[in-house]
Image (cartoon, rainbow, N blue to C red; front, top):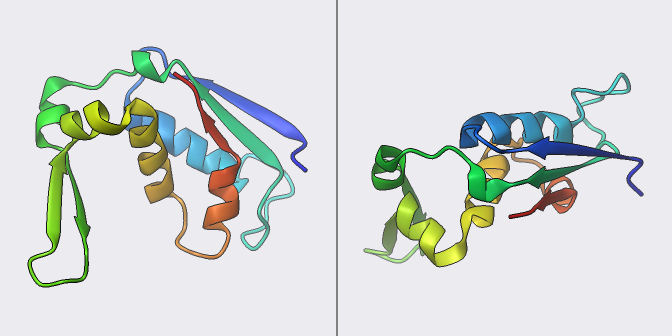
Length: 117
């Protein structure tokens, strides 16, 4: 069970700054009881994601890539189209997910992340 709730107000902030702050808290580095093999007990709430500061250049030039593992299965999508299709909340979750360590604690840490419009 989570003990603490850490709230981040994203109004006027850049996406990467908000995502790195959230990742740091989810990993547990702000706690005095930090250990790299322990999940942590703080959940993170990111509010006002619709007011994030994302430039038009970033929306045009940031590319999300995925591959289906079949020949010619690479799909690319610009950030602006990604946000229009899935919403700004998914872009924030994807940014935080990319900043977490790639290990068994990644999924439980992502479950403690809540993103609000």
